[in-house]
Length: 272
Image (cartoon, rainbow, N blue to C red; front, side, top):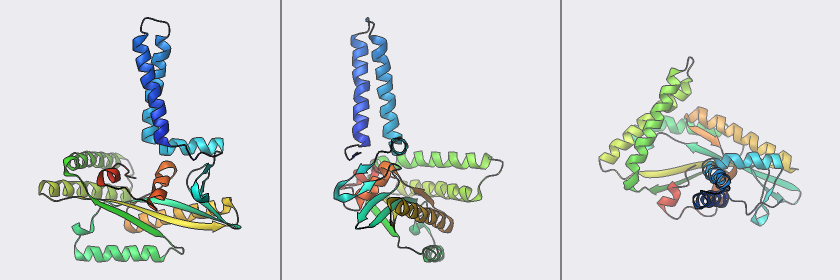
């Protein structure tokens, strides 16, 4: 089935419209027997709009995998029901690409020269252990100062909360503790630099890997295996958070292979 027009944002608008319609109808027909039905329509539409907007990248792959829907894109690209790879056919060979988000909590400008040398060595060792080509992509932009301080304060509070919860566990994960502590430190440093007049830079980093096979299934399985290997290698060697992307988040990376966000606001609104 062709789902090329299936877009999370459009469906959010549709169910949001259901909520608005139900709200208007409920108020205008408050004294009629239709009021309860319209009120339910309002609650359903509003709830679905929020859920799809916030978690559509997770909800839609579940739906399409169960209904076996296949999305056909331009130029012959295809997205399977699982929505975790992008397929392309060339003759009798199939290619599958997978994308991963890399969330780095330390900046090289905040490290000493010795620490940067060690970090670069770890990165080279990690990449040298991978036996297939890997594409690293990074987008950077100077961010708007008007909202940056509030966002970093919110992120700091969330990082402290995650760190506190991990510490309270009977058997806390040492790697997670180290990662959360670095995230807290980074947020505190960024807030200090903002107060000092530093202009912050936003960065989005993702990784792409491609595999081939004699069938869609074999190419997909190979791409997933390479992505899983990359996730384990990078997260362990660099102690960064690596997330395998699917659904709308994966499509966003695919679009960035051709066009990137035109301004800082658009880039900030498309954080992985």
